[in-house]
Image (cartoon, rainbow, N blue to C red; front, side, top):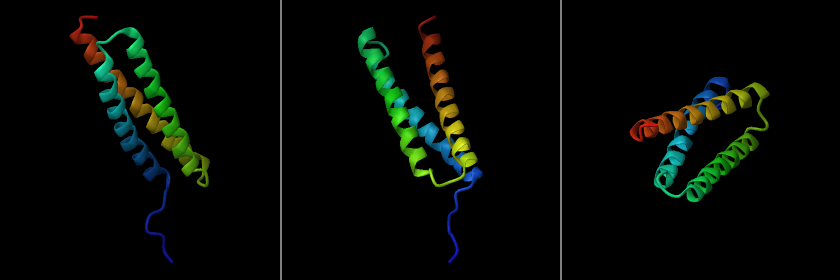
Length: 100
């Protein structure tokens, strides 16, 4: 029987990019609600998003645990890289609005 969908380095990288965009967008929306509030609330929301990203990464690596290490590394690299770039762009645009 033929495999319809096989996970290789290319598909793992593309899925890492899309899921990184998805997670970055979710965290951006969540942080946007708390960015003008008191520091305690903002940092609480910030640590919640970090914890969410860490849990998402651990669960997705556990789902890929039977694959080759290079596939897992490619997926993790693109997932983390896209999330960081997405947050840096959103934070930078907010800093320009506040003249900081």
